[in-house]
Length: 94
Length: 236
Image (tube, rainbow over all chains, first blue to last red; front, side, top):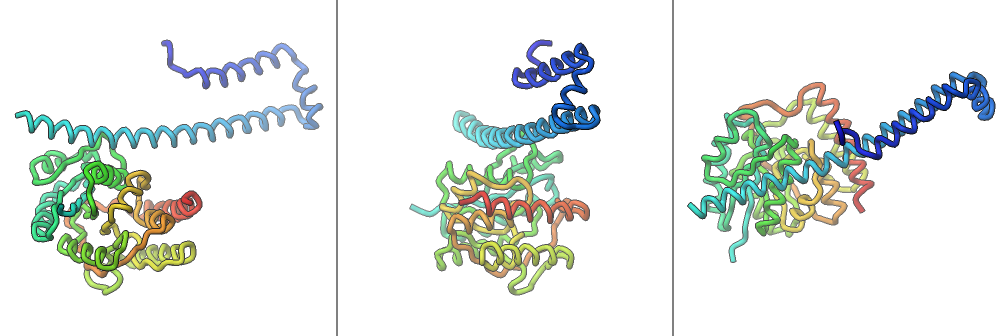
């Protein structure tokens, strides 16, 4: 189905996939990069990196949810007020 | 021109009590000397509340989704701003708030030139006093308000309160969704409003369920304490 994922989220997933693809071709890349960053065991680098990325992403989602909740509330208020106005108009007409 | 008073009644599943609350408020306000309108905000009730209020002598606002009492009250405040009301009073849909005291709130608000007046259970210690554990919680809010704002509000969780035009316009813009009462006090004080309290006697709820159970009571304390602190930091 098209349009299921907004572009900004697609970018995140594309980058993740790209990183995975790079390291699956470049087999000793993990050792090189972790040595560069001074991490003794390469798996630790993966865990650290992943947890960091997930935390950032969660923070972003909390912000988004808060914003949506606020907009949702405003819309609900508008609807309630409009329904009342509409009812008054109907009563005036009849 | 006569001044206008809005009686805002938030209702979520209050089919047992709502009609007596509305009729009672109607009776009290007939002799109050200013034009009034009763506004019931139906917070997407799942019982018969919606149908009942459509047949009552009041303005019914039906929310399409459940927003919580704060969101419901804000709907009423927005209505009050749109329709140019001078005063707004909150009366809970469960029948705990004594409508008979509305004139007392009004006269005190006007006489002392206040922006907000709160009906407090703990001044004359009459009527329903709530449980010991809840009073402890209320004591904690009283202390934190004194510490942060330097004001002494004995019953900061009381929803039975009346606002003037200035205060209505603030809460129509921002109002907390859940358990809004203690946070709103911070909001009012930070905006430089004057707050007063009058002694009232509350009743025990006539029907329905409290929105706060035991475990949610623990959540309530945290949520409201954080809310007070955040509102304090956020509002200039």
